[in-house]
Image (cartoon, rainbow, N blue to C red; front, top):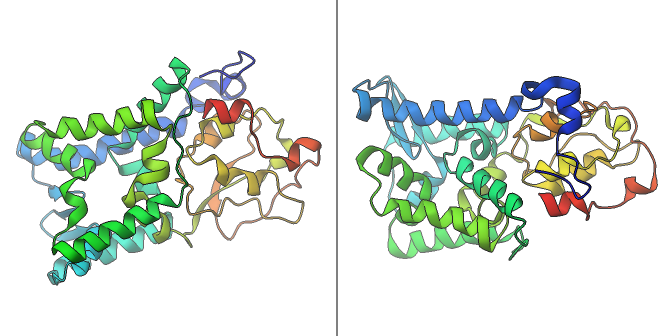
Length: 308
């Protein structure tokens, strides 16, 4: 991706840190996504049953139950009391994501993330218009609607159309019609709404965002005084609105990105040639003061908004 001036996004970071250093967290995320997907495919593909099930519910080494807590809530809404193992598994998963950040699931685990990232890359390469941009709160409405439908129908409603589950089942049993749902997500982000699926509609992302509201793991901008306004972090961030308060705040404002919308993807860390960002905890709010300038008080609306 390039900016309006022709400079490639992350160019300064590559010059300062090398290509690997400027793509470290992107590469680690892909490894993580392949790893988790591979765990579930070892059994059906190779007969190595370390993990049985999928991201909705699984049993690891025949001992550790893990359940998607959003599935559990839908089950309760549908008036189906789950077994104790499912409840235990949901509490384990909820506890982990509440600690490390709910939307870590979106950027480090969810197998649909590479699909939407690919759609965004192609969208930018083709120079397509921004498209329909519903309010970000819409995904919360979608989540609420899923629970209402579950309550009315007595079913786990989202699983009927969940592209994540369909992708898992398709890789195991053959894609069939599941390809249509995955392709629909790709085309939606490519043509209709830039970063629309994860950023505006997905109820799973909405749920995990709420779950990680008080999470410990955070991205921070402790070296924000060194920011040179290149806008690369805004260009690559899937939720660019989360950066502004931490990066452009007053001297006494926290440099922590505290918004639950942050996916902790680490791309802002990757592409920053000035090493402004880093991973830390919510208890570490020390930072060099923000550099005060005219650019520091405005929202980025130019090249970063166009490129993201």
